[in-house]
Length: 115
Image (cartoon, rainbow, N blue to C red):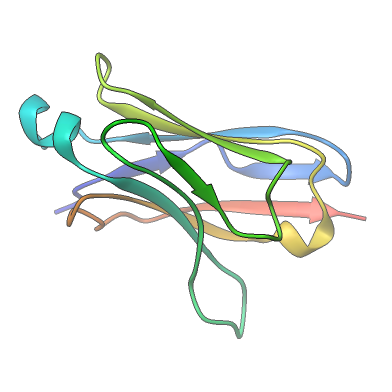
């Protein structure tokens, strides 16, 4: 069973923007509120990498490759997490996955950036 549901991916031209969403319908609110969260991505032939993370109290960290372009956002009231991606580059093309604490079973969402 899926624990998280990623959405919002698509095809976009270089320089464009996308907003990914991660929903956690099976996670109870108190667990969601207290969990660190993160977005990962995996490009063909490469290992999965951490793109952005956010702690339960809102501290964020980003991979150097996306710092200044991506923003991770958590909405505890809606039990959702977002990844705002601006100024997309072709090297951002990958399947993006989210994780909420130890809950990370999801199908991912494909992001394709054309140059």
